[in-house]
Image 1 (cartoon, rainbow, N blue to C red):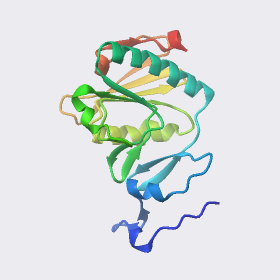
Image 2: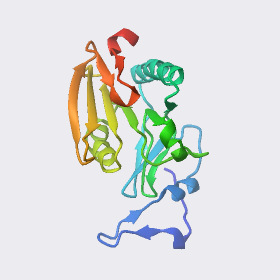
Image 3: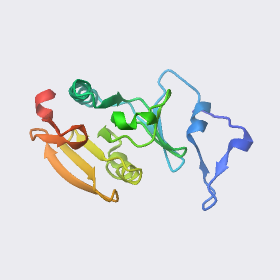
Image 4: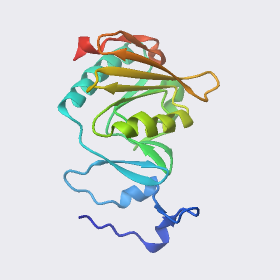
Length: 197
């Protein structure tokens, strides 16, 4: 068991339920150890992200390569892979698998993290299925991530969510790994997952 000490004046409580909550700055007080898990914050609550599977990493690497090649050759912006923090607010921080930020929004790229909403976030499901399918989808919609793609290696499906024009809800499209789908935020880059993994 790991014990963490915070200065008493830095402990914060939610006024509505009295629960302790954390901010992104609080994470710097956490100890480092050889197998430190990735940490995300949702509404000030800490979530530990387990290490991904081999298939997860294979999909991430191959898809990142395809996207990076397209983004670089068309000078569209920047691609990042986990682990890198996306800080929406001090109490909402995520570590997506793949992130795209256009040249028009490059000011959100900081030295240590991303501060603001990327245009594209891709998550590859592992053991944290419910969090990616429900909780993070809501977070990404609320912070206006234009496109959110979930890849489910277990079911071999792709769920694509695109923000509507009013930026209030996502429209959803579903594909199998054998179906071509187009990443709209990347000038409709066509992807067929079964061709790259």
